[in-house]
Amino acid sequence: MQIYDNKYYLCRGYQLEKTNKQLIYYHIPKTGGTTICNILHNLFKSSFRIKGTPTNERDGDSAYEFFFSNKNKILNSNFDFVYGHFQYCISNYFPNRLSITTLRNPVERCISHYNMIMERNLLDTGTNIEECFKKNLIPQNMITQIFSGTDNKDLNINNNKLDVALSKITKNINYLFDIKNIEDLLNLIISLYDMPNLFFQKLQQSKKNYFPKDEKNNEIIKKYNEFDIEIYSYLKKNKLFTEITNSNGKRTKNNYFIYSLDFQVNDKQTIVVDEKKMTNIIFIRDPKEIIFSYSKVIKSPKMSDIGVKMQFDL
Image (tube, rainbow, N blue to C red; front, side, top):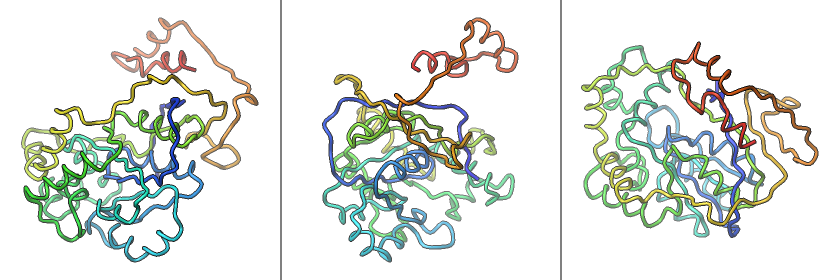
């Protein structure tokens, strides 16, 4: 079952020069990629997911093995959008590419991964986090593995692989986003590829925390992800994440791509609508009354809770 955010997000894009390059998305688990891939899969004329896990942490082929088993089909089809949990080395087969990825604080990513496999009943309640790393239920140093690896079975991570991964990320990834800026990534993509505006929900956000948070468990995560932490810290410190400045102004688009699991139109989760053919109804209320009402269930409601900013944007 898909887990989704009950909030909606709006992306209208910018005035940018268009591209026709093949879009390649390196999906590191628990970095917002499910939302990104589901939306873009529906927007591009032809999309392909390279199935499988980054390593062999579960039964079945890894993404690396799946790609080489289906290489001719994938390459001959010349898909507009290719995505999955695959090693960077696969990108060598896509010379005319635009490469993007999303990263996340490695400690937060591992906690989210732990919560995900708990929600899917893949772990017994209270399973030791160190046991998850030792059994590869939660892969170690995922960023380093994906961007340095040439073989999904080569899990030995060292300083040399750290250097390779950092070099690939900083020199070969066209756009690098933090998970907190997913809307910026989607604004960029719909602008570069001349796609409709977006109105969407985020997927697979865990609603419950199963992770026993304490300093000991945090130190265990850091111990098994020291290379990823070094990469993420370096990128943050040197401000190497993509930041979109809306210097070119907003573009004018009348059509909207709506992606929602809350409600469906004609049994579909997606629909493209023309703003000119829409009738818009909006209910408003004195913000003071909204805050007072919310304060009964949320102790200190924030702007994102009461929806006034979204209402203003709309």
